[in-house]
Image (cartoon, rainbow, N blue to C red; front, side, top):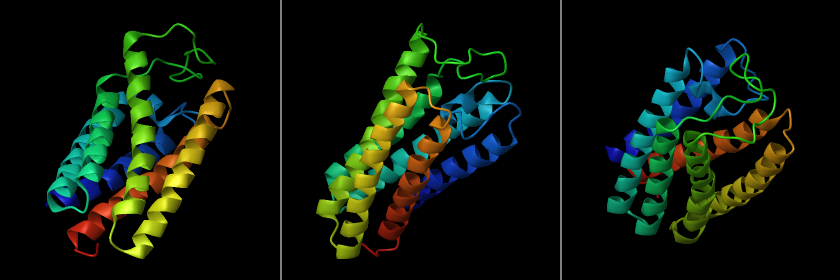
Amino acid sequence: MALWVGAVGAVSFVLVFLIDGASRPGYAPIRHPVSSLALGSRGGIQTANFLISGSAITAGALGVIIKGPSALLGVVLAIFGLSLVASGVFRMDPLLGYPPGAPTGIPEQQSTAHRIHDLAGAVVFLSLPVSAAISAFTLPTTPWRVVSGGVAVALFLGLVQFGRAWEQVSPRIGLIQRAMIIPGWGWLAALFAALALGLI
């Protein structure tokens, strides 16, 4: 049951931010990061998304620890899930013109909550490719090892690209971030589901 909870948590996270971001006045998915959805009058939607999905993924990670194939994989996935929860507890500051009236760039002076959010986000985007890399060496089936290895490489490369985009205040920050989140969370949901079905 915990594995299915994790799968649903991963899928729902993506669906919520895609739908909310596409319908949010003043929000540009290509430019703005997902975390900016936790700001503004509808910010509670993304905050709840962080908290609920992060908790669900943490539950799925416990299922991985219990069922296998690797306790280390489960521990790293639990860190990933808990870091998502922390991202919901601590919101980022307004930036990049969102919410409307916010600074158009990325302010140098940041609140404590923003700094903690950034730290939690760094753990999120590092722990997922690490999880995929662990899977590439520990999963018992060759197709899953190959796919997991490819996901790990893609996510690591995406993380580097996202870091550059953030430093350069690229107008495509949101797009680059989503190019990591959607396949990364999709891989995680598929992993939970395959473990729950006994396919791995």
